[in-house]
Length: 269
Image (cartoon, rainbow, N blue to C red; front, side, top):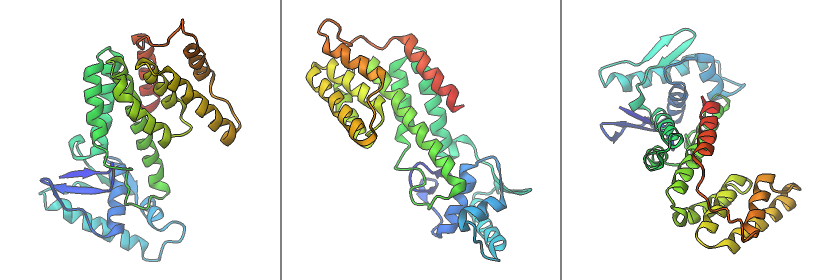
């Protein structure tokens, strides 16, 4: 059986959908999945679903949801939702949950990039990002217990995307990166890293005037919306672009990539 949380919640049995139809049963399953192989307090499930005003029957009702989920797993010949004080634990192997597979592929890709293997890294990171079908748990009304897990997954998704862009840069795929980075600057209008990579990609494809325009547009946006200027790093890139004698088209140095990748892997560990 396969459980997918990187998008709408999905349960597959031999490739065929068997996702519970009842929202609160799916909601309960989402809590167990996002805490796979860890005990979840029954009180956490109740608070996630009913907030500060649970009904008097909340404990019994939550136990009923667990029972329905256990029936789903028992059809596979094993019960992997175990009762363990003060609640329940769902035991899953890595290949049963897409989020765990994503973390593994992302970690492998980041290490390959840091070790100087950009082509293998790009392939592994594309596999990781290809597991996403939309926002994590897109069809679940995420509450307090799930919000942190979803936020961490979305942050990891951005890190994997950044690593894949770095790998493509090292492989000289600047022309392919330009349209993707243009879209990313619209999706993340205040994330300077995407603007920086867009400027580098435009310059590497002989479109320096457009790269300079990207900086000017960002400068206006930050000034008008936030009252701040671009970072010194971006200012230095802009200054280098203005100098015909100092085109910043050199490949990203391996040592710099290792520093970036290892730093981010350590922070996410």
